[in-house]
Length: 586
Ligand code: AMP
Image 1 (cartoon, rainbow, N blue to C red):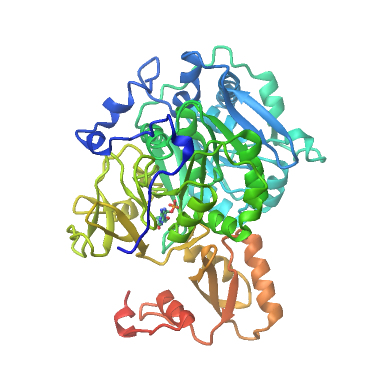
Image 2 (image 1 turned 30 degrees about the horizontal axis):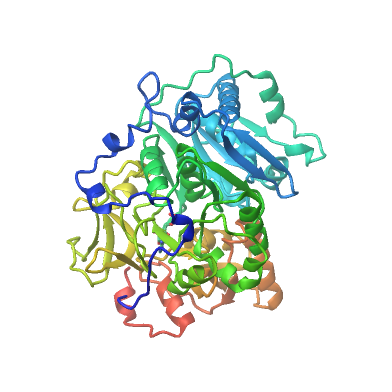
């Protein structure tokens, strides 16, 4: 932990620009979220708070309607630009569509879409109409979509024709679902829409933004739910409130160093929390131009986006950075990346080599940040003005108290690893796991929110990530609950039991590995392994489905029948299995 490289501020692009949060100590002192954020943010004209208003309308009211809010780069080379005024008009219009469909305050509206401009317009429109958005990762197969929509009691779904076809089999099982709105972008899909579905463009063409009023949401109204995985049970719906925007705005400024003239590129998908908190809310509340790239990862593709749109601030993930390192210096040299002045990452530990590599090749450090779906916004950061300690996740932002605790939930001294915890009360803190109050309460102990991570703290207040305290797998920055994968596998007739672990991987940090026992009459073979891989990929998603599957004769279990994943992992890694009697009743 103490063996690290310190990287200063080599970026020439900083010259003449004072990084945000340049006086960390005095910013922390007596910090007050509302007092300090609100000279710049606005309450709704009627006194409430709505995060879509903060992100978009506020800038139009302040005279910046003509500024570019979103540049969309489509996967087929399309390009569309939207000003803040256009985003306001379109999202008002979609809000009006939702009002026409009878949306009620707090209704859950799921969005299952690729990164199209209509996704962002629809999300903002639903928020303005008082609904709660539930964005879903478009790579999901039918099972994760069904689990989430059923659990949340989704009333509306917004999707594309192709994705609708993918989940056709589950739609009738979501009993609360009333309407499916379909976006056939650019007529990409040639068949007529399914009977009963509503055409997004038709709805928009007859709706009007004229006279549309933002629902009078308050800071405590729910705005968004993202599902996250735990080590037991299916993923839980994490609920955030409109007030999360206060922290998303401040961290956009402090940790991503967003200034009004920035052109910003966040590679995260809105199906995950980074893609909404930092793909929508932080950039737009800070009034920057947000570049949305529809395509997937590619070294040349990412560098093209930066080069073409003269991106100044880039937010990405460690797995992407490791892939960029693998792609090497060639693609860096063949692009003009001189517009870049700040790079940040989140979601997994950013290895020190990556920070050092970034410093060499991009001529600036990559700034690691730590946070979770539950925290709603960055909590700990290598913020713009600080020296980066390669391998550390930085220091807590103003307004956040973070600690390392022992097993009795008392703070530990610097240098010792323990439970990473936060003092509740920050604005973007989750307010509930949907319908799971007991699970929610279990995350709080002795006045602390328990993150589920292990970390240590050094003498200077820098935090160092050590690992997860549970069985949750972090693959390419996405959390995967082993239970969800196990449940999918045992639906195959050949599988009797399944145990799922995270296996270390040099690029994705961990990959999902499954062990199965077979039902009588089935024999293990390469063909069966392939079939199980395909089966789980169809049900889940490529990133969530196991990358490796092996058979075991006996599944190790506790006396109460729980699968001992830790033992499976120890065996896989050739580590000592330890005293298994202590694991027995885990
Ligand atoms: P999610 O809720 O999907 O955003 O995942 C949150 C989890 O990802 C955290 O609890 C950590 O285990 C991991 N994580 C997020 N950011 C970092 C980071 N900077 N360093 C190490 N792990 C991280």
